[in-house]
Amino acid sequence: METTGGIQASLSGRYAVALFDLARDGKTLDTVAESLAALKAAIAQSADFRELINSPVLSRDAAGKTIAAVAASIGTDPLTAKFLGVLAQNRRLSQLPAVIRAYETLLSNHKGEVRAEVTSAHALTKTQITALSKSLKARVGRDVTVDPKVDPAILGGLVVKIGSQMIDSSIRTRLNSLALAMKG
Image 1 (cartoon, rainbow, N blue to C red):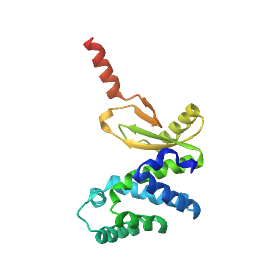
Image 2: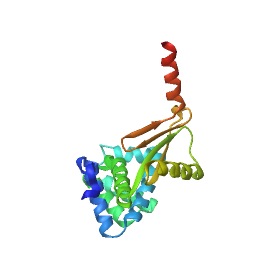
Image 3: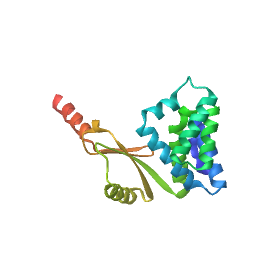
Image 4: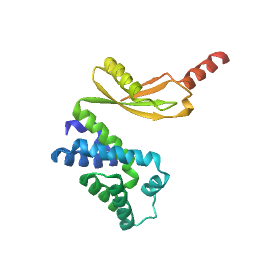
């Protein structure tokens, strides 16, 4: 269990570890990761899906049937589909985004990679993500998987989080620093 680190401390972490262990034993780590990436995209793009996973009024059976239909439409692998059913039966669908993040971290650790959460004002192109990944690899000495996020509120620049480190080169932060300096 050394690959799990401190992830097991949270409820979502325990679910992620269980899924990771099953996927590793079944030699489907990357297949499950692809299914989880599709679910992550669906959560980001669909307000209805976000509402479904956070709904406290759906019965276990209704949540199970609905999540099974969503899993089939997205094309998730059988292990992930079954796992979603377990989350629905245990009324833990709201934990899905945190489970996905924890699984991504476990997979990165397993592969000897580091995950970097990169926030930009506009979506980054594949070329920019590749260049950023190479630059970060030179800095940390390990392969870096970039997890891009978009937040127009930062105005420009990047905010990069790698583990407990944060590099904030956003225009918003620079403007706030300038405003503080001008106040004296």
